[in-house]
Amino acid sequence: MPIQSPLSNLSDVLMQIKDSAGQYQTTLKKNEAATRAVLVDPILRALGWDIANTNMVEVEKTRNNVRADYALSDTNQIPRIIIEAKSLGSDLTKQNIVMSLVNYAFNFKLNDVFLTDGLTWHHFNEFTPGKLQPTKILDIANDDPVSVAAYLVQHVDAAKFWPREETIDVLAQRVEQLESLVQTLSKRISTMQQSVFPQPTSQPTQPTQTSTKPKQTFIDLNKFDNPAGKKPTHFRLPDGTVLDIRSWKDVLVESCKFALENNAKIPIPFPDRIGKKTFLFNTSAPAKGISYISEQYNGRTIYIYTNYDSTNIIENSLYVLKQVPSSLIKVPPGVTLKK
Image (cartoon, rainbow, N blue to C red; front, side, top):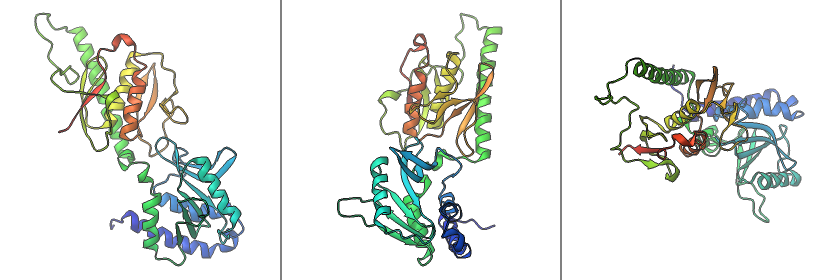
């Protein structure tokens, strides 16, 4: 089976959209909801947007009594693109329709707004007094599908707002779950061994993976700036314990585990730093395709949400570590970076 690029895949979808518009035009011209389901939703899915995941795509998003058909949000659930869909064949140049887009841009505090009837897409990103013309008009029925696909990928691809490093398949998710479980069990076995077979006081305890490594030079998390493109190698917990890590996600996972292990009274569900729709700890797993790990807490399984970029990983790590009792805080949490 040949490998198909995202651009090629989207081009094929656009050609299917063109065929569907011709085949079902009688119904689509009278029904906006059908237009969205048959012509718009497949394009968004091909661009990586999970229509069923309300963290990514919120249908009929309302703000200040202004309702948009689609609000495409980033990993922090902040709307970044608004799409208004009309029934097939609608006049997209009507003044009242265009003015509604200006209203959307003002209320949602963004510039990228699309207006479409499923076949024709108008992109507005420069709303200025006296200038209400679209920056770009895409015509799926007549334009080169590759050119249309390239423009949509450039401006609407979900990877711009949901980094591909944060998107994992089911197998990778299971691997993360197993790795987390192995680490937890290893810690527990080590603790049990030390309690049953304590080391003689005259002999220093042999260092383990989690032993303190004072020779490392750490950067305090609360002073860290612009982590993008940098790779952490060690993470220092507030009690001085140093862990070998491979990614920024490990920083968040270990921070969450440390908080859970040392505070039995964290309320579940526990919202993340933004505190709106996403829960850092929850009793139900996130939607399919969203990165998470599971842990045991107070006798039940909880799910730790990890689908953040590196900046938000740091902020949520600092946020959750505030749940740790002050008596355990010996040093500020920090990381070392790969040279």
